[in-house]
Amino acid sequence: MSQMPQQAALPKCPSCAEPLEPGDLFCGACGYDLSAVPAPPADQPTLTTTGAPDGGVDWPEPEPATTGGTEPRAHRAADVPGTDSGGTPLHTPEPAASGVRFDRPAEATEPTEPEEYPLQAPDPRAEPPAQVCVACRAGRVDGDGYCENCGHAQPRERDHMERESGPAAAISDRGLRHHRNEDDFTVAHTALPDGSPAALAVVCDGVSSATRPDEASTAASRAAGDVLLAALPRGTHPQAAMHEAIVAAAKAVDALAEAPDGAREHAPHQNAPACTIVASVVASGLLVVGWVGDSRAYWVPDDRSAPPARLTEDDSWAAQMVAAGLMNEAEAYADERAHAITGWLGADAYELEPHTASFKPDRSGVVLVCTDGLWNYAEAPEEMAEVLPPDAAARPLHAARVLVGHALDAGGHDNVTVAVVPFPTPPQGAGSA
View (spheres, rainbow, N blue to C red):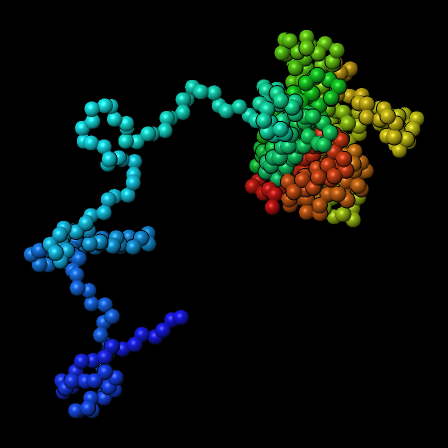
């Protein structure tokens, strides 16, 4: 166990110099209190390890302290010349092992090994490492996006897309059953000639029974968006601009039937590329929608005590049955032919009939522009309003995520795309909170 250190005995009295006996607490001659004498140093080395033969050593000045918190380097005895008490030079320790060898002669008769072996720089001409399958983690992925080992289709960038532009936001998701996402969208914002803001959204749904439906939806959404962004700043009425945008989208999809040259050779039994379209423009207190097909636009006011509304009518078999009075809506949409579309964009469409409509809501709210991958799970306007978060106008991207999540939670049988556009359009620079 630990012990307290004992004070060493004194040989003589520090006061009168008379000899003392071991264990004396007071001097027998003068009565001096020996307990008040401080103990001698515990260590009195007899060897000087840094002394020079001719006397003192000229130590170097310590390095200044750095601002980074590093302490000055401590000087060691071997840092300067010196000898021990016997006159022998102080031993200098060997340096720590490094990349340089000290056990070789200065002059070698054979080629010496390099002191260091630098890593070889990668060859810029070398091919990049092959993508590894996300499923089996072993197979290489071919140019078509499939694993050469297990055949698993790899995730594509288009499988889930999110975008914001000014006050508008949109999301498109592949869903849980389809092998690819055949939807596409455009969201954008601009200004009218008077400087007032305008926001737009275009959503397109590729027709799966046609060839290259994903290309059709991309071509249509981009063409329509480009026309709207060019026409609105020129002062074109939003409804006229919407009509021009749908016509331009139809021409862009028609052009896909002619290119590439070998497309029909690989799939001669399929129809030409085709898609549906629905779009909305919010500008200067006006809400304009346009569509061809069965993609829809909904109006949901911020005041949920006011009724929501569906702003479009489907180009579908079910809608025709209802319009003709042959079936009620419940019977028509329960039929297996309900979603057979009667209008679309594509080279083999019977006739292009762009639908446009203008509205002037008397209160604030949001416009939802979506494919049937969403409205299949919230078909009635009241159902859509119930799913939509109450702060959708202030947080459109969050609202779009909630709607897409609702469709996925309900089964996600189809691609899901939705755009959320607040009405009226807030000043430019406002976006999701």
